[in-house]
Length: 185
Image (cartoon, rainbow, N blue to C red; front, side, top):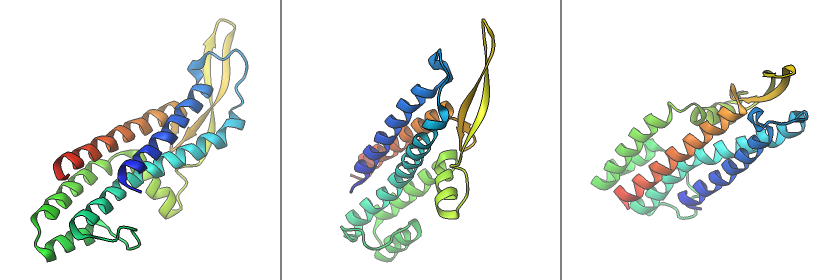
């Protein structure tokens, strides 16, 4: 699997999140109560898959260029990280891989400030609970009075914000991949 395949996977789950969010969104003008309890597991599972795929895009990019510059394992059976890539480029004295890893590290600095980019690491690798879903009351003023509904919150955000943050991260990852391909082939 290449980086673009992983990006396509992320888009698949992002599209599912958008569809689910339109179903449960408070702005959808539902006349009857929404069964948020029934949709909660579907939303959470697609959210988890989306951010895991998005986070993996950046890792896949590193492997793509390890294969290109170092003829690194095409079946990706060996581990590679930013430090190892830097050391290998330095040891071989190759300028293009050095330039790539410098650029990659700069992009990583931008990404690590994105909330959802770090949520996956905290939740998956450290056993945190950022991806736990919670139901919170929302209040809408209608002509008949105040209407109380449940809203899904995940990673500390309501589902509509979660989806827009996922889309922002997707667009950022897409831009990074395009820049890498333009700059480094």
